[in-house]
Length: 87
Image 1 (cartoon, rainbow, N blue to C red):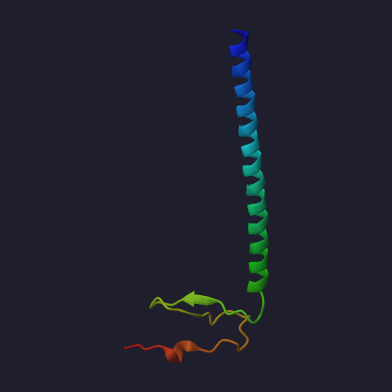
Image 2: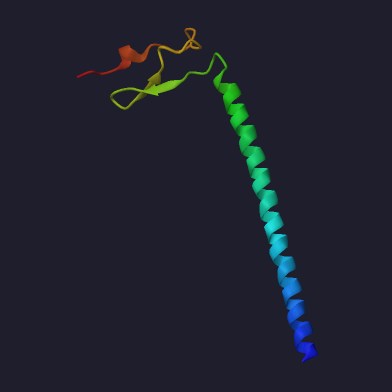
């Protein structure tokens, strides 16, 4: 009887160690992914504020074109209204 209890206790301890170890690994990975996502977002925000970046807006016909109202486009984006084919 004592042997069965010791065997069950051993299995429970090993199972708990595996469970908490996997849980810790998953939490560590989750934190690393969150840090990476924050860094990518900050980089994207910095790049978006650069004056040479053209912001595209979806037009009525479904084609993305440079936004004419954005102040950051100081002549770097061409006016594509002449490129449209309004049949």
